[in-house]
Amino acid sequence: MSDPGIPSSKLPLATRAPGKCILFGEHAVVHGKPEVVLAIDLHTQVALRGATEHRLNGSAEAARSNAYLVEGLRRLHPDGPPLDVTVTSRLPRAAGLGSSAAFTSALSAGLWALRGGVSRAELAASSFEVERGAQGVGSPGDTTATVGGGYLSINAGTGPAAWTVRDGDREWAVRRLPDPQWVWVVGYTGIPRNTGETVRAVGRRLDQSDGPALLDRFQSVALEGVDALREERREAVGRLLDQNQALLREVGVSHPRVEALLAAAAPGCDGGKLTGAGAGGSVVVLPKPGHELEVARRIARAGGVPYIVKPAPLGVQLVEHLGVR
Ligand code: MEV
Image (cartoon, rainbow, N blue to C red; front, side, top):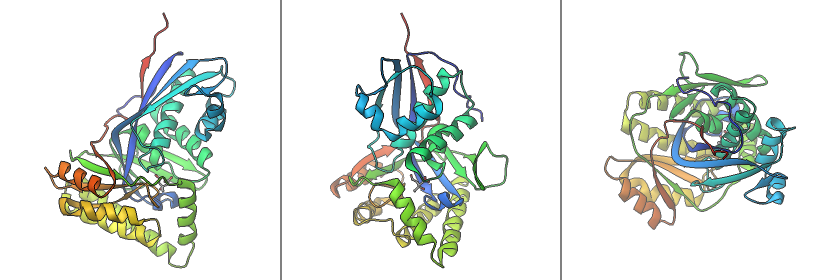
């Protein structure tokens, strides 16, 4: 990876991680199939300071009940001194835009900095373990985006992998994709969703007899998506986003509000789909060049919260040592 890892640091410190958007392959990736993720320029910042007991945004009770913080501290800071953890984020929570992954990787990066630093590959594996430990299910897709930055493919292509995350007999090989310099629009439906429940429901659907064939269709769309992105074939990417949405509908994770936002955006777009776990959450659409604002307005008029987003080229970073006077 050209991007270096996280260096050693001391308290107080701050880290910053981008949000994420999934262009192809959510849910199928949990079953080892390919995925394409994009880190987006809506960031989460985590500041760590010394304290007399663990606190999250000033509250000891919040520090005890936030599963991601509890899991991160258990794995990466078991004997460390109490921390005051302050989170500020531009990402709506539980919206499918990676708020949990951004928090998890920013927290993990900060805790690793206190332990003497970490490589990006190790941080990716460790952030996945923390997120999965907190959620109970899932793939390393979201933390791959927030740790790696830019466009990344998982389990697609044959060149050398930037890193591989392993879990039992399952593995996810991560490769960088070139940035075609497109602007995307995401739209939050306003309906929060629960990733764990949605992943389990799709798992039950995929246990049916046509499950393997469905997973193969997810795989074909994602692999074609990787080729179309590499070759900057915009209309083909749009068509494949629509095909991916049809598959997500078929496994039961679309939602009337998702469909309403996609229908509202469609006249100004090359294609679009839900992004993340679904059952609410957000959509991602590829606006025709110059139509970004129009598409954002269409989403807003349909009741969604639009964000015009660009790729965040860098994954999680140590932004500053907050300075001890
Ligand atoms: C959630 O953002 C993406 C899912 O594929 C779950 C996961 O990969 O962990 C639905």
